[in-house]
Every structure is written in C-alpha cells, then in structure tokens.
Length: 377
Picture 1 (tube, rainbow, N blue to C red):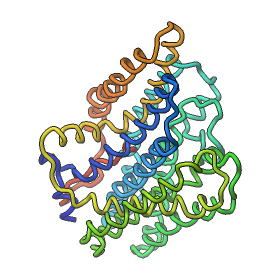
Picture 2 (cartoon, helix red, strand yellow; picture 1 turned 180 degrees about the horizontal axis):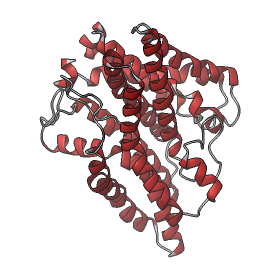
Picture 3 (tube, rainbow, N blue to C red; picture 1 turned 135 degrees about the vertical axis):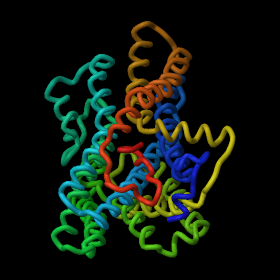
Picture 4 (tube, helix red, strand yellow; picture 1 turned 90 degrees about the horizontal axis):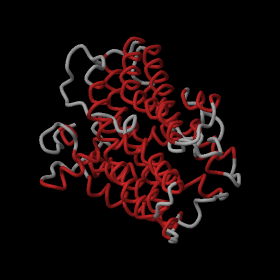
C-alpha cells in the first residue's frame, strides 16, 4: 500500500506513476486519431503501427480503471458489503462519468448531423454496443469503451458485493474476479472470428468486461501484499517487451481482422503486459518541473479529452470543408480545442460535481483515495 499512497506528484496525494499511465493512454488515442485525420488531409497514410496506438491506449485505460475501482470495491467488501454501500458506490461513479457524457451527447446533434431520436436513446442508455455491434454510421464512436466501463461498474460491483453479502464471508472475491476474467474471453472464442471482428466482437460490451477485470485482479493482489509488487523493475522488464511484441505483430493484422489467434491470445497478452506495466508504474514516486505539470494536467483532463476529441476533429473538418479551409486551419483550430474544451469541462463542470458526491465511508479511510480513470479517463 505504501508504494501507491506514497507515490505522489507534487504532494497532491495522486500517484505520479498512475498519472503517467493515464497521460500515455490518452496520448496514444489522441496521436492515433489525429494522425489519421491530419494525414488524410495532407495525403499521408500513417503506418498501421501508429494506428494501433489507439488500441493500446484504450486497453491501458481499462486496466487502470479496474485497478482503481477495484481498490475501492475491495474496501467496501472488507467493511460494509451492503445494498446501501453498493448504491453509494454507483452514485459516485455515475456522478463522475455520466454528467460530462450526457452533456456532450446533448451537444453532438448541434455539431454534427443527428442520427435521430431512436439512436440517441441508445446512447443515452449506454446500450449502443451492449450485446451487438456499434452503429455503423460512426456517430459518437469513442463511446463504445465508455459503455463497456459503465456496464462493468454496474455488473461487477453488484455481483461482488452481493456475493460477499450472501456468503457473509470474503471468499467469493476471487471467484467473482476470475469469472469476469474468463467468461467474456471464452465467449469471444465461441463467437469465432467474423470478418467484421472489431464492431461485432471487440467493441461489444459483454465480450470485453475481462479487460477491466484484469485491473481488479491487480488491486486484489496489491491488497493481499503479493510479492510481485516488490519487484517493479522485473514487472516492467516483462511487461514492456510483451506489449511491444503484440504491438509489432498486430500492426498489420488488427484492422480488419479475422484471425482466431487474435481472439485467443492477443487480448490476453495485451492485458497481461499492461498489468505488468502498471505494477512497474506504481514504483514511480515523484516527478518535478515542467514534466510533472504537463503529465498531471493531461491526466486530470484525460476523460474529457477522450470523450470529446474525435467529435471536435469531425466538427472542425465539417466546418472546414463547408467553408473551403485547408489542413492548416483544421490543425490550428482542432488542437487547441481538444485541450481547452476538456479543461473547461473539468474546471467548471466536473470538479464542482465531484465535490458534491456522497461519501463512500462514514469514517475517512487511512489511505489517500485516488480518482478513477475513465469512468475515469
């Protein structure tokens, strides 16, 4: 526990190592999408390996979310695994994730062509990809991962707290974690490898819950004092090469994909590699100067960046094409907006709401609570 609570950036109680992972995750997504859009306008085709950065950024967000949410849920099952505790947990998650999501969803029809009321209702209920592919029109396409996180928060927390409450013991914790790691992975293999694998399987919420469960497993191992956390350099030495190997091998095969090898091994290897990287990141205790400020700023608005960046790109492109502006105009306008809009959202909208969330525990916990990622990005 000391490696986490003591790993602060600028003495704020936040983990610098986890902030660095947040920063890297959102940077990967941003770079991949900007390269695709700007490259198309400039007549340049980004390499497939660069496009894969978005995949690894999202998978890293999943592991981070599971780790941070898992720490809180494990505190709940250790102290008060009741219906009231579960409801407080969900209200806190919803107050963190849903207000900016719904605010942006309400703005989207004003910025881009509306998909219609029925489609908007799907996005409002987070059912756009619950057990079926995302809509093919590309509207609010980044929301596929947000829906996965929301359904994980709901189903996993209810299952975990409910199982512990019914058993009146903590032994169900590992069975629940393992079940959420195994069942979605087996379901993906049963489905097979359709030609449209990405929307039909990879982006379907019920097939991807295991990506976040890996982070919860890490949280449980951390809480139990697993010796793996005492060897962060070894974890990094194993995790980084594993991620790099998957990245290099997948660079030309992921989009489109119809290979059973990816279904059976690649997501497993990615989650394992990123989990090992997270263990190593926990040992990063301090950062100073400009680097610390930049990383802290990017981490604090990472959710807003992820939520809004692609729509901003699409809206600026639409405006530029309508008014005959070129690539320089698109870059000069979209880049500042992709930082300014999330900052304003966090400063004037999200942060005041966070201050009004109900307390999870009646007595302050002995460790410093870390804000989840993407609910939490």
